[in-house]
Image (cartoon, rainbow, N blue to C red; front, side, top):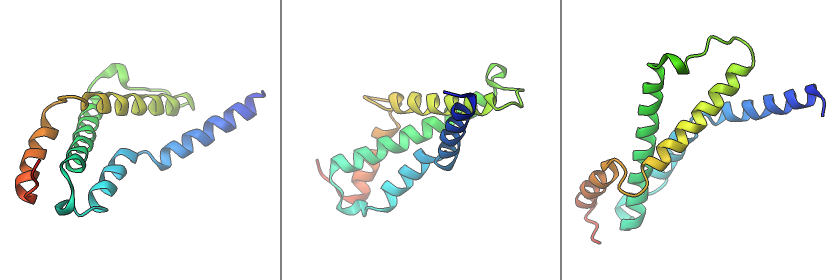
Length: 122
């Protein structure tokens, strides 16, 4: 495969990534606004709370990443955008896996409060 074809494919992949860069935030917003949570069952409510916890954790990781010199890139070439893509993907995976199981406990606290607010019983 020629370098032009590989570079073109990589650029297309990167452009697709940039168009959905806030996919976790958009996914969370869509799942919360598309549903009337007053009609939700406890499983749907808990899933929404876990998605929020994962999104919150991802944003926290991204802010923490900004403070670490090792992550900062002075590269002005095209490789820096691929590093950014890999870093963002990795942070999304870390955030998603950190909210599984007990997670940080934020999802459980939200769930308990929303159960009361929406009169949802187990």
